[in-house]
Every structure is written in C-alpha cells, then in structure tokens.
Length: 268
Image (cartoon, rainbow, N blue to C red; front, side, top):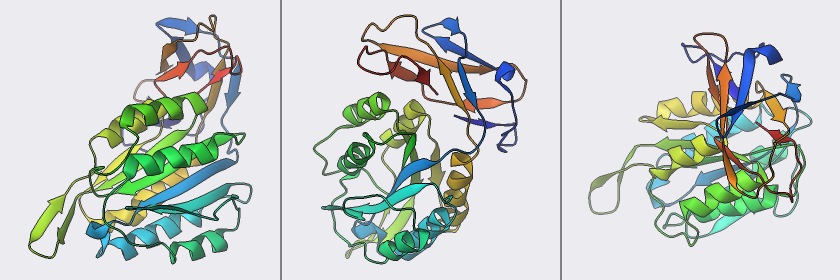
C-alpha cells in the first residue's frame, strides 16, 4: 500500500495508529503493520508491438532505470509481448540487475498486442512465490489479441495478492501508410486500482524514465497492513484503507477473496 500527500509525494513514515481498515463497511483491528522496505518479486513486461518501433529504445532505457533501483534481496524477470510472449530468465527469477538489464536488449518485435495474456502469464509466474509481488506492465495500445479478459486478470491478481503497476503511453507513429495515434487500453487503470498498484498515463516519451523510477521508489516505500477477517465466507469483500491525518491519500487493493483455502491474515 502506498501513501502520498497532496503534492503526490511519498509518505513513508506513518505509524499504525494513523490507519484504519474497513472490511465490507466494518472497521477491523490491525494485526500486522510494517513500514520498512521488504523484498519484492517483480516482472517488468514491455509492449514490443509494431507501434513501439520508434519509442522502444526509450522504453528500454526507462526499464533499465527501474531495474537498477532494485534492492539486493529483490528478484525479477523481464518480458515482452506482441503476438508472442517471452520472459527472461525463462524459468527462474534473478537478483542480478546487470543480467536483467542485459535481457532488455534481446526483446523481440511483433505486431498484435496480447496485453492481458501477458499480464496473466506474469501473474502465473508470481503466484507461488512468497512475499510481496508485483507486475509492472507498459503499453501504448489496446489489447487486440488476448484470449484472457480483463476481469479474469483482476480476479487472478486479487486471489494471488499481486499488485499491478501500469504505464500507458499515448503514442503517435507511422503505420506504413499514415500517421496514427494509439492510446493505452482503458482497462489498465481499473486493473491497477483494484490491485493496489498505480496507473500512469504519459503523453510524451520524455516522461518514461521519471515514471519508471517513481514506480521503483514506491515499491520500496510501501506499508503492509494486515487484519484477521471475521468471516471466511468464500466471497469477495470490499476493502478500504482510511487515514486519520488530513491531506493524505492511501492507494491500496480494493477487495480480497475471503476464502477458507487462503491464510486468515488478509494484507494490504
């Protein structure tokens, strides 16, 4: 969970008494509280479809800025999606920032945009890992080729407790016949909001580096709050995190599955 002030600056030094958790409209006692950096497993997934031909080098440099800010105990993979979906390393995660940056050079181009398939496959790779988990996905266009829809991706991210950060670029490019404008899929904002991540809409490539850097800073300035649900009824519960201090904004997941098959300590 991320907290910002009115100027959108990160606020990393609040204490447990500054928060309130509400589960389906009912306040809950906070049983877990952490506000120190903890290791994270993350997948950086980049759109390398045809519309990205001109901007891709800038996107890779921005992704490099993110990867170089990972902490020693973090682990990651990098990937790309177009008509294909690829991950590096192919099987395991790595904490080697140099290795991850090197993989960026090998990402291939393609044409259709399998945005939600790529996000779903990223979630599948993260779901059995312990600790904090996130997907950072970048795209400049609509999903036009996936087999998996937005709703199923949100459900999977919720069930497996994975944050999704989405960076969307409004992109002008030449498609071989004329100049066209592409805009990121409208579902990205909802996906990020539902999972407690962040959504960033960019209108120029000059904003890429600072945005990827901001995501890295957020991931290492977050809070972990937990409570013991009163009812594990197998239903999706609405969650709300409230701050007692004025002028603060909490960005946290909006729901969780109260399943008897998952641990009883629901965390933000």
